[in-house]
Length: 95
Image (cartoon, rainbow, N blue to C red):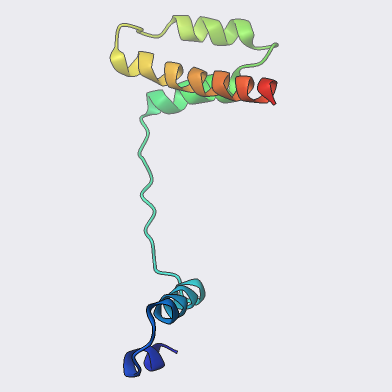
C-alpha cells in the first residue's frame, strides 16, 4: 500500500488511512525517558505510599518529623504526594 501511495495520486483521506494503518502495524520506535529520582524522594515516597498504615502510623510520623522541613526539596515531595492522595479520596467519595 505504501508503494501504491507513492505511485498514485490519492485523495487525502485515503493517504491518511494508509498512513494510519501503517503506523498501527509498524509503530515508530519511541524512547521513553524515565525521570531519575533522588534517594530522598524514593524514601519519602516509600514512607507515604508503602509504609503508611494504621499499624505504622506512629513510626511514619516520627520519621517524617526528623526531616529538615526548611529545605524546599524535602517539603515539596510529601506535599505533592499527599495532594494526589487527597484528590483520589475525594474523587471516590463523590462518585
